[in-house]
Image (tube, rainbow, N blue to C red; front, side, top):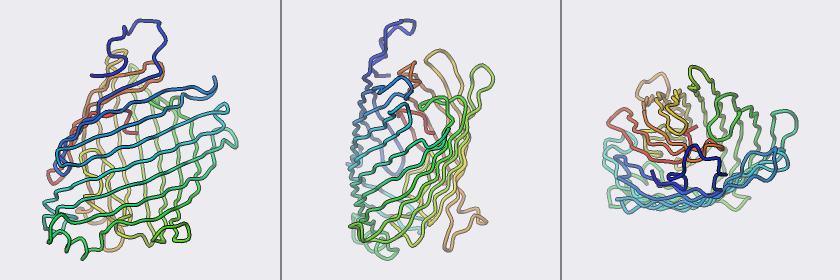
Length: 337
């Protein structure tokens, strides 16, 4: 594993470096194989606030795709205030043998540029309230005549819009990077409006719940339940599958619900392993969760290495599989949830 800490003595009392560097690798049927890197800087604004993190990343794939981004996750004012910021830019070439279940092979190019910001303020105990803003310019085009016709027929051409929303969060996790106890509940919405400078009017609502249970020999059982619902959204803004083993955007519907459980096994001070299973349902319009075709199960297993012991930051290698020949290999920074 490449990292700023890989040559450090795990028993050393030397203060950990605030810098981190890690490779990013993935391989999956639709996007090919990609390789890249992420660099970050850690800073704690005060003793009561969790450590903040500032990241730059970039990847390039065998399908001539690239994604780059800048991200910041900050905690300050004795953890009474939290701010997240990000910018992402990408060009993604996809090769689908069965696009959205149509039975047709489709080659697409997705051009993406987006910015986001989220601010939360602790009002009382573990409850935070705040707002968020998103600006998205997302376009999809076919790479050949037939692909273009299919995309136009189903109306999947991306969207350009800006949105604002509210955020409610309850956070009792004992650590922001690798929790072993506690839970988090996040409820938010984004109202995309032409009056904010976009081309579309629609709404997105989301709910996320995670809980962490420590048990035998510092093992951790992590569970999550997510929901995403859209109202009057263009097909380019529909919900997709958020599970390892599937390519985001390959399957779409107005709404999505996901449930996943992961067992995190401690092997040594720095090394660990994980196994997980989950499933997602895409529904809305003519799709229903009563139809098994709209359910997408997945399983995964992997190893992880703790880059920063004090901060409990990990790099993980996972292999995952879903239905219909979907699979993926990932070497990424951080826990999946």
